[in-house]
Length: 101
Image (cartoon, rainbow, N blue to C red; front, side):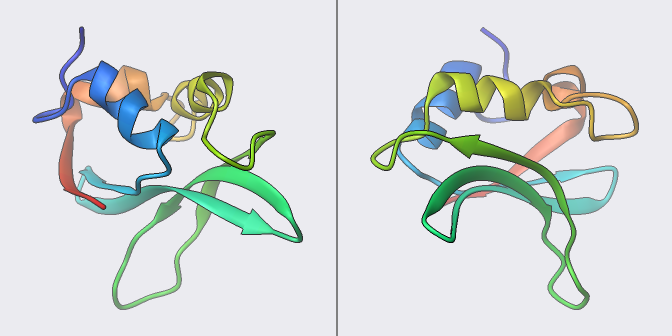
């Protein structure tokens, strides 16, 4: 399967399914994929992850399980064209995983 400069696609799904947060960089911009809860609804989101300025949510998909992130939700997030008109899957060769929490 595909490699995310240090993480295989199957591992990406595994980490996200178990509510992990993944920090990565693309074109010099830091991002984070993470579960999020708002008003008792569960989401998987991608945010910019700057330390020194306001961050922007670029993808937000509702997740209908309160226990784990579903594969359907992960698929929607990583296939959303939010990186200069490309999806995370399309740019995976150009990203670098920074941290998995």
